[in-house]
Image (cartoon, rainbow, N blue to C red; front, side):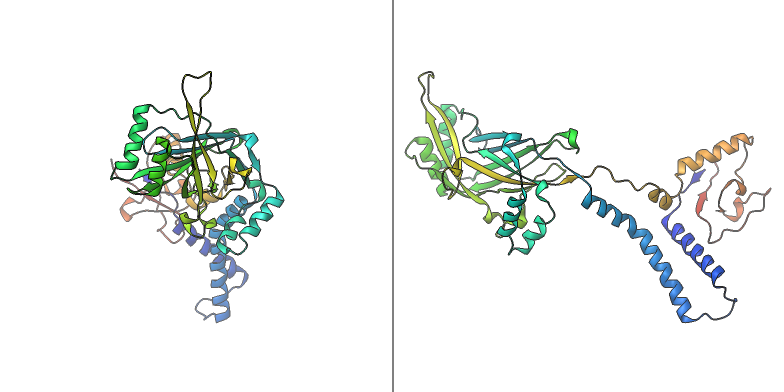
Length: 371
């Protein structure tokens, strides 16, 4: 026996009949007599309004809960990596909680003043309060020595100068959260890449740095997005609303190759420094990344709403009918075993109990078949 659950169409039909019965009991109208238009349209309008409220109230309730209630789970670790092609990363730096500073009210006001003429940016910023925003102070000097073998170094120089294919320069960031404060994703990450075409000035200047013919930093324009949105999911995308020109609005950076020959070391140690284009000392030694964190709301449950819309679960109804049939010693399920009338085909009526014909009040449709 197969039992189908209560559908939304039956629910709406039942609700409409109930409202009509209540209205007729309070305002009786003789049958066959034409109703006034004010009564007809007034009753119909109330029914439509009531149905709209039933459908939209859960959505409105969830929206209000999500906008008010929630826990901000700030990153506890921010890692930034710059990589050229498939070679050893040029720059890797991680900062922890002491370098991840929460926004205060004055910083939030400065941010809004900066974008006050940009309606799209203000629409995004107003979705967050200053408690949702942090600034990651990323040290401009790489946290690790650039460990590249001499053959690989020569291969990089050769590809920068002589290769006829694009070479990818990639900036990646990774945010780690404490799952104990909420959320289901521990690491949120993303990347931004630019393709350096053959003949690109950046390629030639990087090659000069590696050869040793250049000491000045290499400028890479529009490479560092300093506004990042950290959602509850796994992708932390740049905030496009805060860049008028899209990716062309990203900050430029400078790359410098530093070296140190220590007396305690057998060779020269090298590392890369990064600074924001046009920065003023001493702020050049720090990359500031502003991170907008979405609140974690947990699971919002509207108990009873879903069940009333869907009706009884088919397995639960089947188990209930099976138990009653077993207590009665087996046999067919009778019409009286159901709390509501069940529509059947004319050849499936119980001969012992003349059933009612299926009508508009049927809330559950049951299909039976012989095994």
